[in-house]
Length: 310
Ligand SMILES: [Zn+2]
Image 1 (tube, protein in one colour):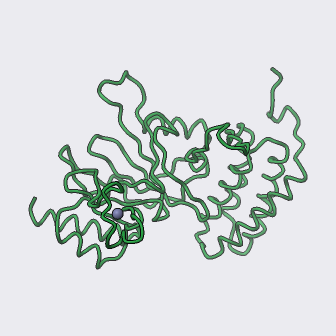
Image 2 (cartoon, rainbow, N blue to C red):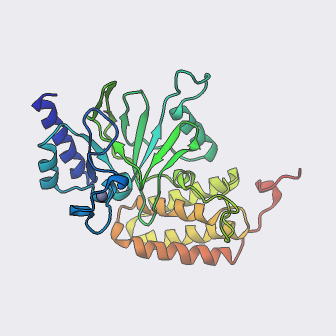
Image 3 (cartoon, rainbow, N blue to C red):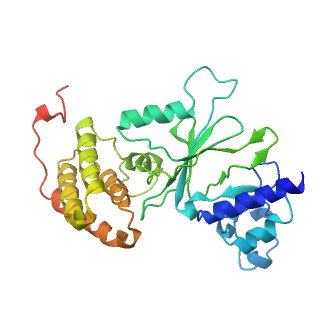
């Protein structure tokens, strides 16, 4: 590989770091492995003197470190989204030996339609195999891991514990490319909910209730309340948020809506205000008003579409 290509990848690494994304070098022309030892071959020296450290913990936005590392080889650029406050929805293509059916991108769009959630345009990359990866900022206070074939058969997610290659990275079969350089809104609540991998039932003493997809009625109410929150002018945000959270809390109390879902959607709506400094206060308003509404459950007639007689 020419020095021009090495220099290009160094620029990619610096550009990703400039977006606040923690990067780590991957062996040239590969998507794996990282230019780092594995735990089972840990020499126990240097950064690992106390204990083995992972590429994720070493991933950095520091330009000096990046310049030093990428000066030595044309490393591909891994971004660790969890550490960077982002989440990557990774839509794969179907393998040649798979029967005909939807690919990951089609599965994701179908899922968005079923959940009644938006699938906003956002920063998107293509993979050499023809897949696409959607990069969304994660709302404050939300921590997401990574999943494999969890939200759909050809859709993985990359949060904490996962990484994705930056556009400009190359493999033998092609390059990762930037399809859309628009920075999208925070990860929609329905996608947060879909990306949460719950522990298997019966594996712990606690009862982990699966988060139910809301009914069409509840989903519509959530969208309407969250739209009002997101659109509230700055002087009326506190009131709008507490009103919306109370209304959704009433649906939670009536067992029409999952509380985690309501909370995630409200947080995503608040994130549209783009004032991260007030996130703690906003979370407090959400919790208080949700709980208050929960204590005064909404009474809904069957006509409004909750539960039909079987
Ligand atoms: Zn080590």
